[in-house]
Amino acid sequence: MKKLVIITGASSGIGKCLATQFSKKGHPTLLLSRSLDKMEDLNLPNSLCKSVDVTDLEKMREAIKEAEEKYGKVDLLINCAGLMLLGHPEVQAFEEWSNMIDVNIKGILTGIHIVLADMKSRNEGTIINISSIAGRKTFDNHSVYCGTKFAVHAITENIRKEVADSNVRVIVIAPGVVDTPLLSHTTNEEIKDNYDEWKKTIESGLDPLQISNCIEFAYSQPQDVCIREIVIAKTKQLD
Image (cartoon, rainbow, N blue to C red; front, top):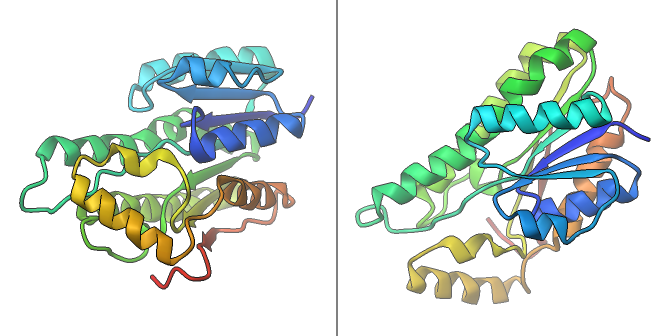
C-alpha cells in the first residue's frame, strides 16, 4: 500500500475527483468534508471518511491521528476545501466575508499546523494548496474572495521557503474557472446569472479531472523536485 493522502473538501468538485484518482493509484486516503454521506458513497478502498469542519483544529487533529494510526504517516496533504461568495463590497454581508476568511485561509492552516513539523522531522512530505487565478489578479465582485486566495499564495510561498531545507514540498495550484458547485454558494442571483453567461463565452470551465491531473503530476515528481506553482485555465479565459 502506498503512502497516506489527506484531501479536504473531498465530497464534491476537485476534491471528489482527487479522492477517486489517488485511491485508484493505490493510496490510502483520509477524506474530510462536512458531507459525510457523499464521501462514503464513493465507496473507496482503504479510505477513512470524516465529517469535519476544516477550521476546527482539534477535530482535524483527531481525524488525522486516526488515519495515521491506520495507514501510516501523512505523505500528502491537499487543502481543497474552499468557499466562493461573490458580491458587491458595499452591500455584501460581513458574515459572508468572515466565512470565506475562515474556510479559505484558516481552513488550510489547520492541516498544515498538524502535519508540518512531523514532515520536517522525517525530511519528506508534500502539501498542496488549491488557490485560484483570483489569487494572482483581481476580478469584479470578488474582493474578499481574491483577498483570501492572495493569502493562500503568500502563505504557501513563504512556508515553502522555510521548509525547503528539510526536503518538504509546498505547492500552490491556481485554477481559472472550473466546473464545480463553488458558484452555487453565492447568494446574489444577478451576479450568478452574469457569471454563468460569461462562462458560455469560454465554452464552460475546466473539468475537475484536469486540475486533479495537475496535482498528481506535481506530486509524482521526485521528492527533490518541487513544482512550486501551476496556473491553469481555459485557453479562451482572458483574465
